[in-house]
Length: 87
Image 1 (cartoon, rainbow, N blue to C red):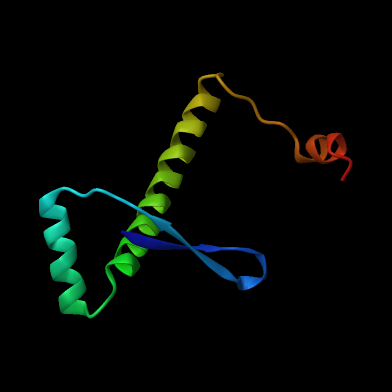
Image 2 (cartoon, rainbow, N blue to C red):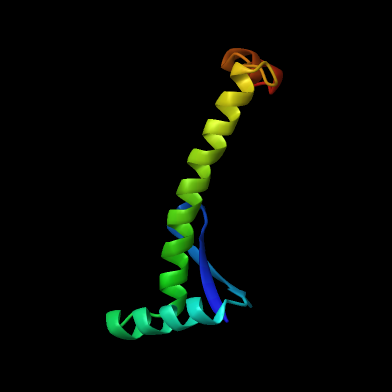
């Protein structure tokens, strides 16, 4: 079981509990790292996910750029979007 902190507006954090299943080898590595570093396993998992999400953001950006270059997507001027939203 791990607890993930979710940032909300105003700098407040709420912890959300998740049940996860890990490969035995990964679980062992997590145990060793947590013990050696003196960190909670949930903290290590949270930081690892944050880093992985950064990697996924880059992957999505590259995919979207590729879609744009192949004509599968299009750019919309921000002014038009704001106007359509009444901003």
